[in-house]
Amino acid sequence: MEEHIVKILNIEKVTHDVKRFRIEKPEGYRFTPGQATELSINTPELKDEKRPFTFTCLNSASYLEFTIKIYSSRNGVTNELGKLEPGAELIIRDVWGAISYKGKGVFIAGGAGITPFISIFRDLQTKNEITGNKLIFANKTKADIILEQEFNKLLGKDFVNILSDETVGGYSHGIINKEFLKANISDFNKKFYVCGPPPMIDAVLVQLADLGVGENSITLEL
Image: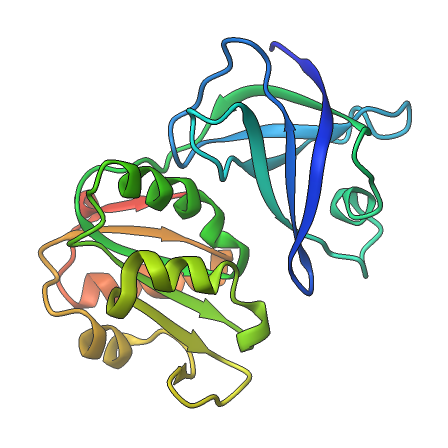
């Protein structure tokens, strides 16, 4: 597996616990929107601690970008990433990933599971192909919604949020269930893209099956 040592160019805060990392892009390095790579911090202690992260920039960008939820309460890689400053070195590897755009449909994301969809929607915007797609985004609270303003601008009424731990005017409350899906999706003969925590994915797959969506219509990132 090929490895590239790259430097962090810029770090920005996206939400209270999510940061955007822009890093150097190796010459000739390419990915399809939705794909990921294994990343590690280039220190003797952490260089072999590999974690998967999804590219959230366009492939045409001069840099690579990751939008990463920092779990500061855990003594793990994201906690260490959260401590880094521009100029620190990372190691990236080959690209991989099962999620890619296969046509208009409904995207269902939970929490940090939104990340594969960020570059997909940004890519669709450059091609003027956003229309006909819908994004359903489940989070605990409004403060957890990643890139809310950007998705509002891209999708308008086709960006639907549901919050499990907070009741906020204009936002659905609860979890994604069959009734919620029926209320927010008019056509189940579409493609579906699902990414999020495994329990959420399992529940959504059961609900979609009950609503007549076949396995061949669903793209997953597991």
